[in-house]
Image (cartoon, rainbow, N blue to C red; front, side, top):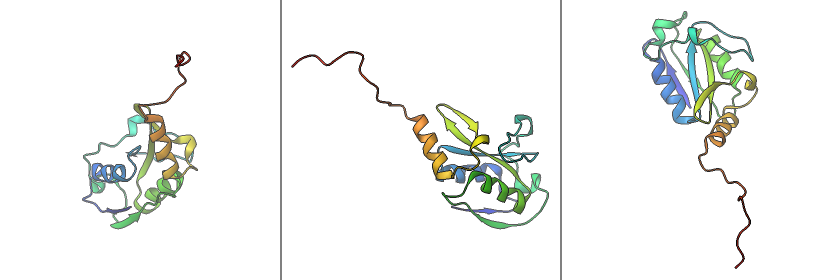
Length: 134
């Protein structure tokens, strides 16, 4: 996927495009950066209606390619180095979103699949009793 990022791009637009490709992942933007395997604080979360020009320190327009085999840590690092944006990728875990702090070495494809698997509504299980004789 390609994201065109400039000062007029809203955070919501980036989030929607990202979720179009990875429906079981979410990308959130924060005021403060974090280290690999480290969580971001909810108090630093940036409102999705803001434009990139409102929140970033460097003003560079560019096209960002995010590949399915990119590692979470690499995507987060790319946003920080190229745009001065601190992002955190979250994974769907049943009915809620969780930061992928311990999963920074996983690829987006792997995490999206994990999120899909944890969100499946129909999980097969063993029957409580044996089938009746025919």
